[in-house]
View 1 (cartoon, rainbow, N blue to C red):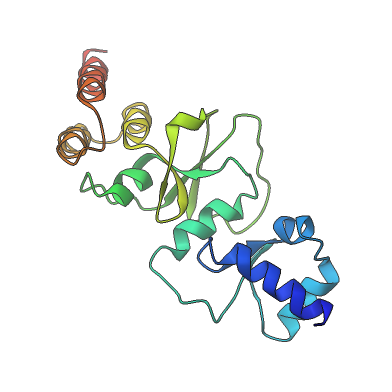
View 2: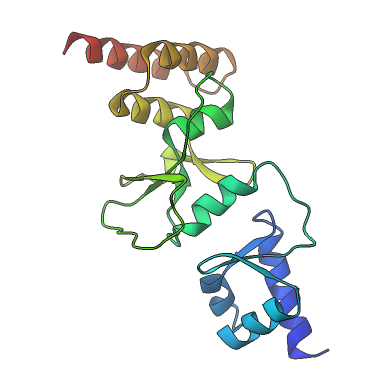
Length: 189
């Protein structure tokens, strides 16, 4: 088996858990260099979809691809879907964000083109505030509601998220009560 085949297969294994995407950094960690990546692109095995992000064109396209790409585009290992995008993903609110919201750590500074469709937020999230949605790291519903309360999302959409999130078992009774109180406090300011 040639090195080219091994590189392709190793990258495929990573991409299979990321909606067909793989980053240049992940390739480097697997020992696949820039030259091998370029060769895979030239042969049509990979498509370059953003700076440092590649996709296997034979991997089935899904409606979740833009969300996975948004997280990988940051090249930040802590990146996750957040705010209104997370509320929409969990289906707890009728929110309709006009951009994909992604959170990275406070010290991370992103300076790259191609993020026009993304709203990047900076917050240090603890592991218990991050969950998985469709194999994509996403803040928990309670965290998304907290973020949206501070962000200024419409109160009726947040009330809907709190009620639906609790009814669906996505937020606990304690979280529901705390989120409701925080939303009401926002109006008192």
